[in-house]
Picture 1 (cartoon, helix red, strand yellow):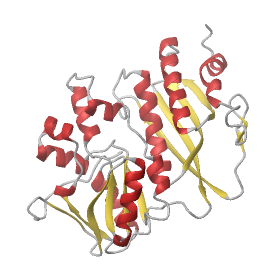
Picture 2 (cartoon, helix red, strand yellow; picture 1 turned 90 degrees about the vertical axis):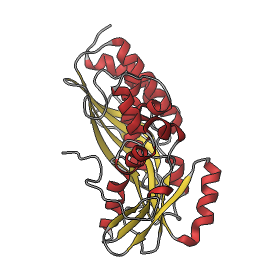
Picture 3 (cartoon, rainbow, N blue to C red; picture 1 turned 135 degrees about the vertical axis):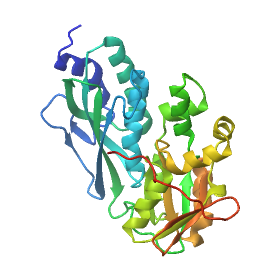
Picture 4 (cartoon, rainbow, N blue to C red; picture 1 turned 180 degrees about the vertical axis):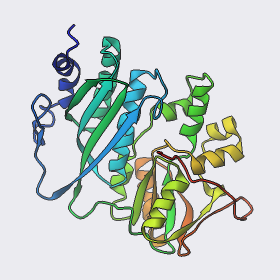
Length: 319
């Protein structure tokens, strides 16, 4: 086969636009100079972009399906954090060589994600170089309903979805040579909480996704409104697999400070706790209260005895 750029696009990426399925929103997809999209009058567009690099955001020589899954989860999670519905995305890639088997696996996995989230590929760019992927993703929300990082108030409850720390332990196991199991899967194939984000519109007062670690993300929420937070370590949702693999103390540390879980952290009025439980039940996803917003500008983590824990650092540092 020809490995020229347009041949690769035609074979592996143009079919992912699904123009027949998304004809109402995608007017022009891959193959032209720009994509042309139709946005409904009563909706607003959320746009985010993330770059993932081999050796930084996924291990060297990772399977193509892992690269595709982690790349899309990182970007879809940003939409979840705004309460948005996926709409379309652009993909810019550099890779050292055009291997047919790698491209086939990558595009097949991408097609599965596109089908799951109903989000078509509408354009992008391919170049030769070290493996790197940049996605620009777009989502829609009803006008005025996007959930921001700002909005928390003193006394609000702090919640997280799912369980925390699994991905970090999965990465540690991968580095030790383990290639299967629940924890490894949580790192390699994270799930963006799109349904949770949408259901939390009107309930969550502030919201952020947990990509760089819980304490780091709570710091962003608190700093935005010049607030603080008190977190109970014993309330953190930990999977039994994580506790068994790492031990309880390490599991708590990973839940607090490690990233890549792509769960959601949000604040809500205590009066809305029953509605949050109803949302949790309706989408079969735990939403656990782990603390409260304070007004002192500090983040305090209390151990199982209620005593403040000492900690250094807050999560993943990009530089």
